[in-house]
Image (cartoon, rainbow, N blue to C red; front, side, top):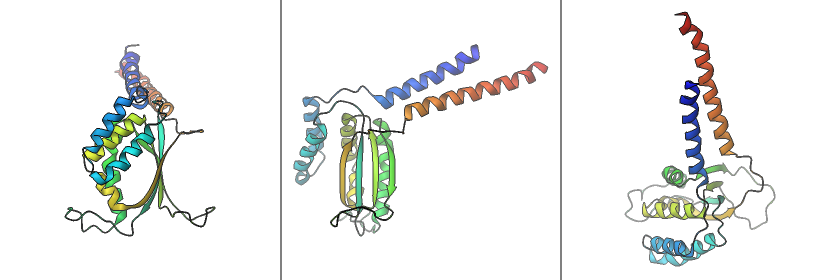
Length: 216
């Protein structure tokens, strides 16, 4: 019984912490919050990009219900990387390398805001598409805990200057939010199953070792 408490309670606490991190509070954005995000994003963006940013924030915030969503990203690379003049990586020629640099830099900011990539895949040929369809290089789907967390994440990477790698790599992108209708990526269930299996394995190991200890 003491062992069950010493192992079971910490695992339960760990799962509850994961649940809070993954689910969040699920409160819709207020008009005041949206205004604050716009002001803060303006402060770290060039003037010529601010009008488009304001429109994008308003569009992503419209009808917010505070719940998680998935952002669908279609990406086409530049023929070669294009960093700004006088940037330390100005000599970089590989758009893929610039994009990989951007992807690595996003990992911890995403986790910090309860978000994570759920699907990334390269294009492999074509099938049904109109004549003027864009030739995307890859698709990425990122699960955000809420639109509030998405905006916090966007503000974080703008302040850190990480988007320079994205635009050095990307010639064109199409980004839009989606709401899954069928979702087999049940992370909370998988986490619960993992913790139960982990606790069961420890319990089984203890039962296996108890006869040996008794014999001594």
